[in-house]
Length: 527
Image (cartoon, rainbow, N blue to C red; front, top):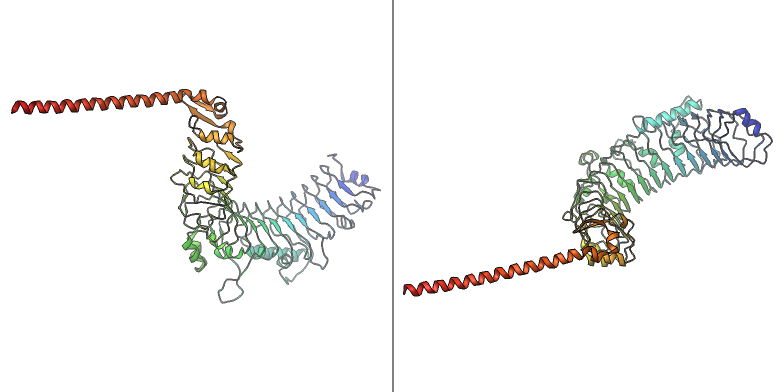
């Protein structure tokens, strides 16, 4: 943060042959000249973030044969027309004004492993070096997908490439040709402008394992790919290595079964904050046989197709119904159903995954104890039932080896002592605040207090006595005194009831005897 100008920096770098790393963050550089590093050719890492650079002269970085890390983030660069840094492994160009990134096709091997083009103005996928080691590609917060279709985007990217390279005849699809050979395992495309899923482009990435496609504008994922035959068959595309897919906040209603079928190794699927409705099991079968248009009309998602799926988030989807066996044939280990306030769960909704589920989140689903029916889940270790209307905890949980449970903000007055005793064998962590606990009905609390279970929110937990509400921690200090009046009142109450019942019984007995005697006397008088 020295405010150095272009000339001052060039003067500073003279005769610095032993310089290994250079950091010039927060200066006033506007242009990088080809002579800037002529005396510093041993540089391995350069960071020139947060400057005003808009021009990089040809030959500026190419002579730096040992350069592996280059960061030019937070500058004013508008385009990269001919990337030629064969030696660089890490390149950060985030937070510039880049509209495109193009590499001339050649037969050289590039060392590039990480490319960060996030927070720019890209309209197209970058045309990266054809031969590279690229593993991580950051494209979040751009304008990719703003064009009408994937085909239009690819076509314009190729036209741009030919224009930059002075090629008058378009001979091939340079974008797809280069992407087909990328060994990328991670791509972040969140916060872009996609209205359709770029199936053809992304399916080229045979090594892709993690794709963040959150916060776009998809609404529907349909199998909209070009057919190269007149037979009318759908061309088969697959994502052979994709394990982690994030589709959060896309307004999704429908996901084509053909797309789901292409996710051969999917492990984690995040559908939070969409409008996805799970299909009934019978719909699973129909969806694999019906046409795409019919599937679009059903507007439900058949999760049973995802045999390898282990982690699923359906948080905030406004789900109306969980049908029987909704997730059957998946391999679910964790399931998040939070913030579905109108959900109705069939008693068999979790059938098929009850033996594999280890984590279940059902917070903020407006559920009462009569609505909630959980099966025995022998693998369940984490359960979140917070922010509901529960007054009883399901007894079926006694067969689960729970290590963590969250029951905050419900309508609980007491907890089942035997259930707490059963859970305490494995339970490490429990959240209980925000309920209506009765201080004087607290065998469960004594059991918890004597166990090794951690209660992080105990200091925030209140309970009530005959005198009003107090904090549970205060009650535990003098529980006998706080509930003495309560017990005496109970004893007096039961004593009074007994006396009243006895008095009524005696009164009735006397009345009956008197009535009988009166009747006998009247009969004698008549005779």
